[in-house]
Amino acid sequence: MTSPPLRICIWNEYHHERENPDVGKLYADGIHNAVATFLREKLGAGAEVTTATLGEPEHGLTVEKLAATDVLYWWGHAKHLDVQDEIVDRVQQRVLEGMGLVVLHSGHDSKIFKRLLGTRCSLRWREAGERERLWISAPGHPIASGLSGEYFELPHAEMYGEYFDIPQPDDVIFISWFEGGEVFRSGCTFTRGAGKIFYFRPGHETYPIYYDANIQQVLTNAALWAKPSGATYLGECRNPTESLSPIEKRD
Image (cartoon, rainbow, N blue to C red; front, side, top):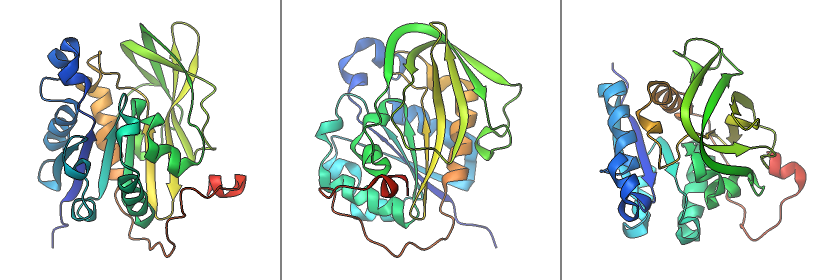
């Protein structure tokens, strides 16, 4: 008996591609479709890949859509505050129930990522088109599968630097070094409820990051790693207005 396809949804604000001509040239059909295209090619019949964007009703993330999603990718940047809290609640509950979440680049500042991690998720940044070297700090991790060597490089990238205000990750798979000397935990995993979360830093909209073979390999691996494990979550979402203790923030 064959396994059912892995159901993946790529969510994107789809703002910069329509407002910035330079971004529009790089990602004419949107970052979400660029990611969806290589995932379909690499995963083939083993996956059903769909997309959703901020401007759709309910941001494209209806109850039915999320119930039919095994792994959700999230790309956000300029419109974090436009995401409705009701949708954030909905995504949070699905992650706790076991849906995987892959948070991309500026998604570190998204409502859903900060909600799940319980911290500000703030960092240092500089947009200067610098060379980035991503050191593979956990070569045995499934997300690093298929990568050769001790590191790979991106010729032009936006710098993100420490301190990155996140709880202690389960795993740090990639550590970036930039020409300016900064370092950054660029690939981190977390577990919340029955769901697995992977944060991956590269992906600034003015650089062709998602056409890079190594980036595509990592994000393909991430889908396979983050898929539901079958574990059961018996709790409920905490009211987001309630404060969390330091211990609860890490759980």
